[in-house]
Image 1 (cartoon, rainbow, N blue to C red):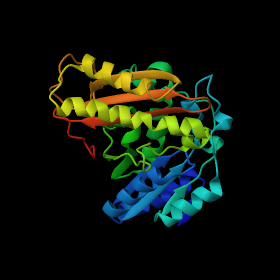
Image 2 (image 1 turned 135 degrees about the vertical axis):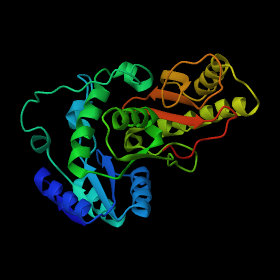
Image 3 (image 1 turned 90 degrees about the horizontal axis):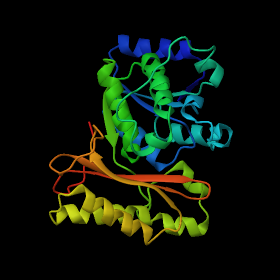
Image 4 (image 1 turned 90 degrees about the vertical axis):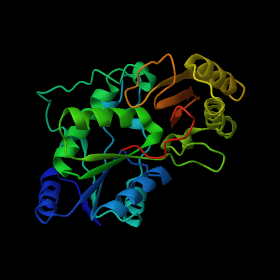
Length: 290
């Protein structure tokens, strides 16, 4: 595995791969890698000849009330994990490399963002599409891999690729979970033992929503109410949202007759956790989005 910190060096490498007709899989991360990231890398490794991984804590994704400096980082650990997962190139730029001067172009996404996490994080997904546009141009991937745990991000990337005519194919990889169902996340390390016990209730509440679909329920309001009730039984912390929307369009619907997402978010003391299930109207879980 080769570690690269400069944009022009990475561009030269990926351009050479493209010239030699090598397929490139790309996994963009903000580091502090865990099994969820490893699953993305393993999926890319299976489908492409070259695996490029980036680690960059993007300041444009952090709002005024969010602490960019407190985001967990461990570069040496991340390097070991990426190398073990089979990365060919690991891109580790700093902020000055990615944003050497004030940008003269402002990117803004106007759909799929005023719901779920985007509702309380104005500008967050503008930062996501800005950095991804730069990274996609630099890496020139054939496929790019994102975890379905952050399903709204998957929907936003889907819009970016289609609207901006990128040739990369988006692969949404299933959420990696702990044995009790809790979705793997870099933020889980911030949970107290008591909060960790409560956190498994997120997945249990989602399963209650799936159960209703399996039983034939097609009214979104009924499912939202029942999932919220199940969540309140397991946590004493603030429930940010419980919602059911079409996917990937992320629109409100009155009747479930298309692919949907049930999504929840809970604010613990030092961590805000999200989880979701993407399902067909009959309750069948969508394991991969592409």
